[in-house]
Length: 228
Image (cartoon, rainbow, N blue to C red; front, side, top):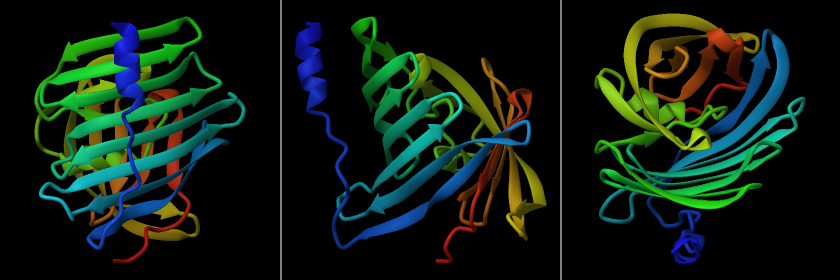
């Protein structure tokens, strides 16, 4: 059964989107610091394809933590509401090598490949669940879209676990991006089984900064998002 599932999931491809109705929602990079020391970088892009009956959002990234020797390559597909539908992450330098999964309404089917072997897992989630993986920051775009919704179910693939977050608006605040000060909307993100996080986004919901105070982690945009 595991072999059949492995073969099926190996066919799961998160293709580059194409078509006349494709638009770039956001793209750029973050500098990641821990206790004010630079430890990593993330490059990412988020695009939307509205050429089909249901719009598709594809978010891709490359994250590197040099001192930890950790490299992450996440690829996420979501619907227009921000709910995740497919996800794949390849991890180099960490305990998990690859997590691939599909989210169909309230059911997750995942396949994990690691040094210890391969394993398939299926579990139930609430409708509208979204992926929010550890050590990846552009995915907070989907969190910001759902601010004020109350408890939001999340999937944390690197832990192969489920959790919930609540996102509340904290008002406007000026933050520094390089040598520029900008006005941003501050959001508070709390997780039942994880650390509290702070999030700053622009008027279009694009992520400018993420902070995890308990870990001393801050991810800050290297440049302002492109004007629309």
